[in-house]
Amino acid sequence: MAGLMRSAAAAILLFSMTSFGFAANKVIIILDASGSMWAQIDGKPKLEIARESLRTVLQSVPADDEIGFMAYGHRTKGSCDDIELIVPPQAGSASAISAAADSMKFLGKTPLTAAVKQAAEALKYTEDKATVVLITDGLETCGGDPCALGKELKQSGVDFTADVVGFGLTADEGKQIACLAENTGGKYIQASDEKALQEALVETVAAPAPAPEPAPTPAPEPAKPEFNFTPSVVMAEGGDPITDGNAWEIYKAAADGTRGDQVTTEYGVLKTNLEPGDYIVVGRDDEARSEQKIKIEAGKTYSPLFTLNAGTLVIHPHASQGSEISGEARVDFAYPGGSTTHYGDTKATVPAGEQRVTVQIGAGTVTETIQLAAGQTVEKDIVVGVGHAVLNAYYTVGGDKADNSGIGFEIVKAKKKIDGSRESVEHSYGPDSKFWLPPDDYVALTTLDLAVVEQPFSIKAGDNQDVKVALGAGVLAMSAPGAYSIEVFSSKKDMEGKRKSLGLTYGDGWQQTIPAGDYVVVRHMSAEGQEKEVPVTIKAGERTEITVQ
Image (cartoon, rainbow, N blue to C red; front, side, top):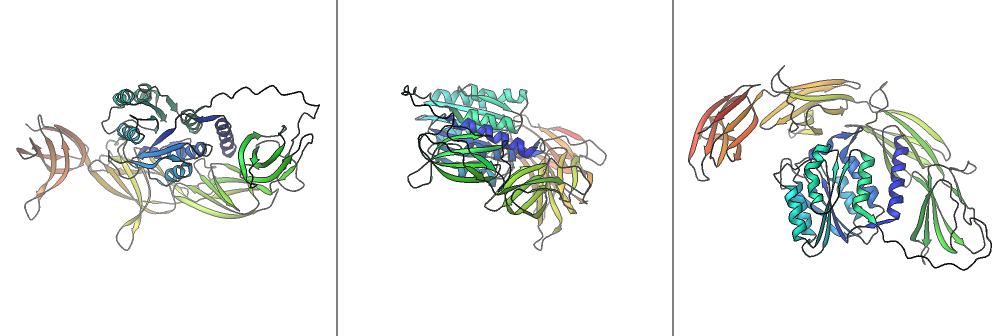
């Protein structure tokens, strides 16, 4: 069912793009690559949805449109400066953008205001027409003011527009960034799932093409058949014609016999009229396709047969033996001449031959080889053999749960490598972080502000574990009226009489989660000195508030 829905969504996008053109000569797409993009919608990571939606829309963009690609939060955790123009605006950049999105990490913060500003400058918005399309699943986390930036860019730009797609945001969250689009005359679109994101990208990245000039009234023609081109397609020789779910692509043939301009894309049973000339016609069903060169002559009719030489694979993925079909599974097919990816319970039409089917659930992966004959349907259950763990952090054993989106969980293998490091397996942010893991011994590296804890645990196939990590920490809230900065040191001095600095913030207020223990808080009244020290003791599971006068 997931495969059919995916095919239908792709069909809608391809139909839309045949009658749409780019809204601006130059466009930069900005993708939110913060750590929150690992969150899931309908059992599928948001980052995977964004990657696939970009790839689908960009495949149908005319090659001469100039598109750039920018991301933030993809290289460094916790940095507000992690913004990069990965693909400068240029013609034919669709493949480069898709490759960049597929390879990037998602782990940082959300400096969306600064990113939009940099994109506008890269487009020379004070000299030329410029459009920025921002895809974000979070709000500004680096102190920027998107509303004020929208007004600034509109006033100083020649013809600047920012379109904003709020991916997975609530209505209230969306209102906080919609002003960026509204203040530039752009659009704000709320996208709550994969289909909505794809439709939003079509609406923001594409715009209606000018209406064609009315065709001259043709001279009367002699009577002719209603249709001159009625092809049919079969899975294998001697098979029944396919009438649903298939597609037809018709191209003008170039002088060298290759594909020229696309004439149309149609679905299901095709009955149409083609003008006399040379064409290349592709009949396809999912990933299987057959191509023929067709010469149309006036007064003649054509009913060619297209044979796909393909079969159907039906894959039911399971996390463990006896478990339900997993909607979170990624199913990759590698077949003669290509590959494709589906999610959850999957049905795919692919070219006949040796099929390598790889099913991934979380960090677990299994690959099976299947021989598929033309016209054959093979249905198979594939068990990955993973267990499930839900991780939460607590300030103390049996104490309050740390319900903070800044909690980071990195799962590493317990066994160290020869150099002492451990292999990283998966990571996530926030409470109730979920992991699918192959059977093994692991360590959960848990981070919340200054508190860092290692929690060992083991997983067996079919497990459903609730892993509780005790931080052994409390919250330190400090106030230093008029201070230039506040710094926290360990209380114990080293052999040289120096203390280790644990954290520094500029301004007169600071609140962090910190391991239980004794510390020294230092207030700086200027960059050069004027310090005052105050000792403080942090107790696990308790909040400590101090004021340094």
